[in-house]
Length: 262
Length: 190
Image (tube, rainbow over all chains, first blue to last red):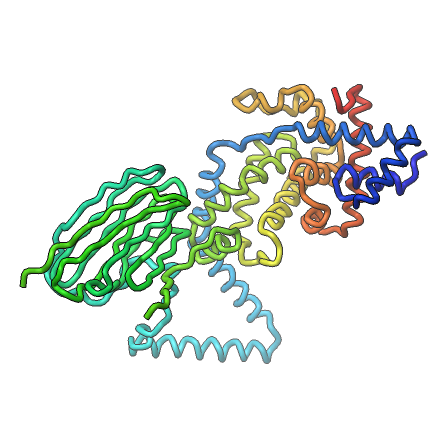
C-alpha cells in the first residue's frame, strides 16, 4: 500500500511542480520502495503516451462558419444586449430608482434633441479614431493633384503600390499594400516644405499611424489601403523617402516632387 | 513641436482584440478565432469523442463567446475564459446527448476522411477510447492537464474548483485511466 503523501508527490513529480528538495526526497524513497517505484513508472509511461497524442486539425471551414454564424446575429449584439439588460433592470427596479431612470432617460432624450437641433454640439463630439473610417482632413484647396510618382513595391512578403500626387497646395500619398506579416511603413519628408495634414483610410484592425515632424510612420498587417495628405509650405521641390521594415529593411525608395510654377 | 501624435493604437494581444470586437470589429474576432480554434476544437473533440460533434460544439462556443464578450473580465486570460466555455458546452452536449455509455473505439472513430490518420493510430485509439470511458468530470482534467498543458491554477479557474480539488481529481483521473488501459490489456507503453 503506497502512502497517500507519496502518491501526491508522484503525481506532482509527473506535473513538474515538486520543489527540488521534494523531488530528491521522492527519488530516494523510490529507490527503496518497489511498489511505489512501479506506480511512479506506470504514471510516467501514461504521461508519455498522452503526450504522443497529436492534436487534430479543425475542419478547414470552421472559422468561416463561425464568422458567418456571428454575422447572422444582431449587427451590434453587445450594444443591444447591454441596452436591453439596462432596460430590463430599470423596469424591474423598485419605485424610486425607476423614477430616477425615467428622469435620466428623459434628460438624455432632451439633450439629444437639443444637440440635433443645434448641430453645433455634434461638431464637438469626441470621435473615437480607433473606429475611424473615411477622411480626417482640412478643407481642400487648390487644383486636383496630378500624378508625380508611382512606386511598385515587390519585397519579401510585401507587395503593392505607392502613388504620389501633387498640386500647388498639397501632396497626396496613396498607399495600397498587402503584407503577410506586420510591417512598419515610414515616410520621411522635409518639414520645411510639407506639413502632414491628415489621412484617409479604410478600417484596418491592428493598425497605427504615428506622426512626428518630418516623419509619418504606420504599421499594418494584411491589406492596408490609405491616403496621407500633406499641405505644401513652399513652392520649392520636395523630397519624400519611403521605407518598409519588419526587423529588416525590406524596401526603400525616394521620390522628388517637382517645384510649383506660379 | 517634437511630440508624437498617435492617431490609432496598435496592439495585438487578446485584450485589445476583445475591445475591438466590442466595438463591432468582426475582423478582430476573426483573429481570435484563428488563434484559438485549434485548441478549442481539440478540447471539444477529446471531451465529446466525435469529430462532427466537436465541430458543432466549437462553433457554438465561439458564437457564445462573441455574444458574451461584454462579460469577459480582463483580469483573467481570454483563453482560460473561452476554455471554460468549451468545457461547459462539451459536458452539456454530452448530457443532452445522454451519452452515458461508452461505445467501442471503432464506432467512436470519425467517418472516413482526411483526418482518419489521426484517430487510427493504434495507441491513440486505445487512449482515446479509454478517455471516453472516464466520466466527463475526470476526462476533462486529463485533457486540460495533459493535452492543453494547463497549470492547476488555470484548470481551477476553468472548472471553477479549488486547486486542491483539481489536484485530487486529476490524480484520481490518472489512476482510473491507468486502470482502464490495464483492463483493456493495454499498458501505456504499448
